[in-house]
Image 1 (cartoon, one colour):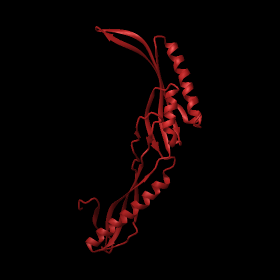
Image 2 (cartoon, rainbow, N blue to C red):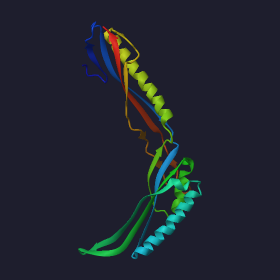
Image 3 (cartoon, one colour):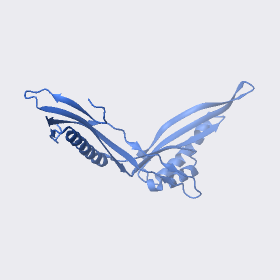
Image 4 (cartoon, rainbow, N blue to C red):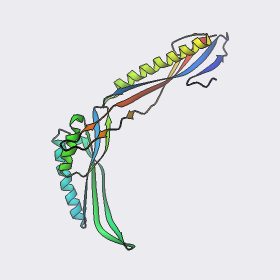
Length: 221
C-alpha cells in the first residue's frame, strides 16, 4: 500500500492471477447561493413581579409575531425555540439580593425572503424584540447541487484511477466495480451583518456542498 491521497491494493489472487485492484477516493465541491434563512428573534422582559414580567413578554411577543406575519411569513414558520423564567439576583457585600424575574421567549423564524431580512430584523426590534441571534442560511432543496457534486466526485475518482494505472503501466477498466458514497456535512458560510442607520444589511454569502466517494477499479497485470 502506498501512502498517497489515494491507495491501491496488490494484485488480487484469482484463477488466472491476471487482475489487481485500485481503490481511490473522489471528491468534488460546488457552491450555491442560499434561498432560505432561519433566525432566532427573542423578547426578554424583567420585573419584580413574575405575572407582570410574563404579561409584558406576551404583549411584546404578540407584537413581534404580527410584525413578522406582515412580511408574509407564515405562522407555521414561526415557532417557540425556547421559553424560560429565571429569578434574578444581585450580590452585595456577600449577600444575595432578589431583584425579580427574567422571562425570555425566543422565536425561531424561517423565511425565503432573504432580500428583506434586514428590514425584518429592524421592524422586529422596533416592535420590541431585544434578542437577535443564530442567523443560519440554507437551501430549501440542495439535491440538485449535491447531485452535481456527486457526479464530479465520481469523475474525480475515475481520473485518479486512470492516473495510477498509467503510472503502473497497467490496463484499467474505467468503470468501477464498486462505488461507495460518503456523508459529508454541508458547510454554511457565516453571514455578514453590519449596523446601519436605515436598514440592517445582511449578506448571506454562499453555501459549500461537498460530495465524496470511494471507488474500486480492476486492472490487468
